[in-house]
Length: 331
Image 1 (cartoon, rainbow, N blue to C red):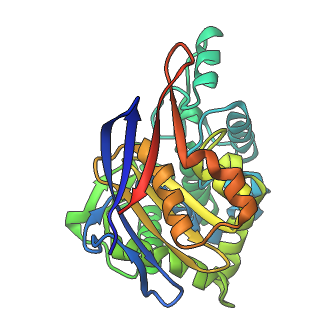
Image 2: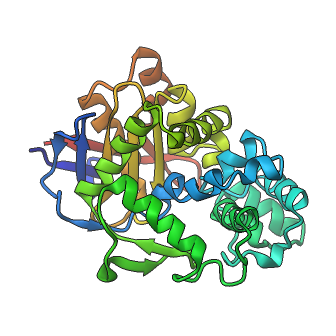
Image 3: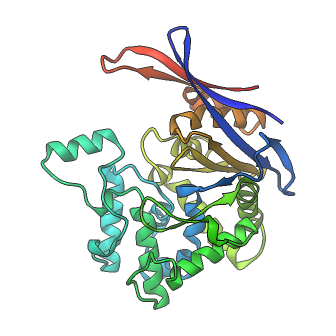
C-alpha cells in the first residue's frame, strides 16, 4: 500500500497538500498498486465518456451520418472550446441537421483562456458548443436519431438512451447502478458514482474487450483509433490527457473528469486504474499521475522526455515570474 500526495511549494515552504486516492489493476483484475481506498465511491464525471459513447457507436450513427474519426473523438471529449473544437461541432450539426437548441448541456465560456478572451474581445457570447460536454451531447442526440428514439428529454434519467448508457457502464464496470449512487453531472446528464474497485476494473475490461473477437471489440477499437488520430480533440492544447495520448502514441489512454478524477490504461500492457484527488483540486492530477506511471514503468524514454514538464509544474504569477511549483510524491 502506498500514500500519494501532491505538494504546492512557494519559495521554500510547502503551501498546500493534496491527498490522492489510487487503485491500479492488471489484465487479470488483480491489484498492482493501491492507496487502500478500493471501496470509496467516486463520481468519475467526464472520465467515463468513452463508455457513454458506446451506444452512439453501436447505433451505427457514424455510418448513417458519415461521421469520420474526428467526430468520434470529440464524442468522448471534454473539449477546451478552441477553434478546432467548435469547427468540428458545427460540422457535426450541419451533417445531422441538429439544431444547436436541441443540446441541453448548458453554456459556459471556453475552458481555454486564449479562446475565451478572443470570444470576449470579438463581442461574441459562448453557445452550447463551447460547453466542454457538447460532443457527448451531440453523440447522444445523434445516437437517438439513428435508433429512431425521440430526442425530447434525451438527458432524462428514464429516457431510453440513458438506459443504454447505464447498460454500457454496468457492463464494463461489472456492477449494477443503485439508487443512492445516481447524481446529475455539470452538463445535466445523469452521472453515477462507482467504487474505485469497479472504476479500475472498467478500464481493464475496456482493453480486454478491445482485444477480444466480440462485436463490441470493433466499436472500442473504432473509438480508440479515432482518439489516437485526434488527441487534441479529446481535451485541447496543454491538456494533460491530450498530451499523454499524443506523446505515448495512444499506448496510454486516459481521460480526466471534474473534481480531480483520472481514469487511465496502458493499452498494450493492460495495466490501468483510477486516480482521485481527495479534495477535488484538478491541479494535483498531472504530477500524481506521472508518479504512478513511473512507478508502474508505463512510459518509455521518449514518452518520459515529452511529458516531463508535468512532473514538476511551475507556478507563474501575473507578472510572468516563477514563484513556486507543483510536484507529487509516493510515500
